[in-house]
Image (cartoon, rainbow, N blue to C red):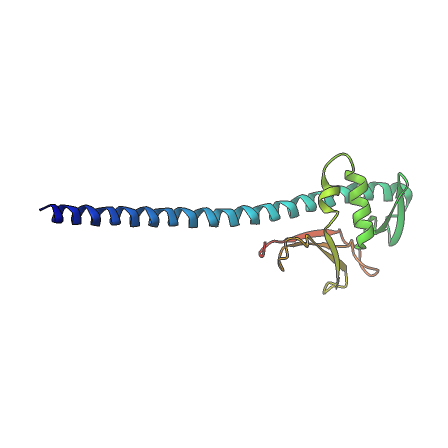
Length: 171
């Protein structure tokens, strides 16, 4: 009798151990997926913050360009000794102008300057309608479809508002 009870207890113990391992595995897989989602949300949030920062910067730059009579075509304005290239009164797509504007406008007010200091600004050529655009991304992410696309305020033939589009399908 002891052998039968001992064998039954042994089988029950093995069953309990297998059950615990399966449950632990399910919990770990669930946590792993949520960690991936948190990383994606962090990257998307950084891009959204950058979009808001560029929008606010463009508002300040446009106000200054209008004051200086530089709201049409390619110009350069100076805000507190910081030179910024503009097109139709808004930031141009040149990396230097975007970095300088973000650094100047948010220096000491928010943490946008340190967070974008290592970001890449890649000219991607004109859009289908001939408007220059630049792709802004964090090279540490190393994802193909995780960037902000900034379009300049038109071209020589047509004036438009600048736009920022977030592509986060690959974050």
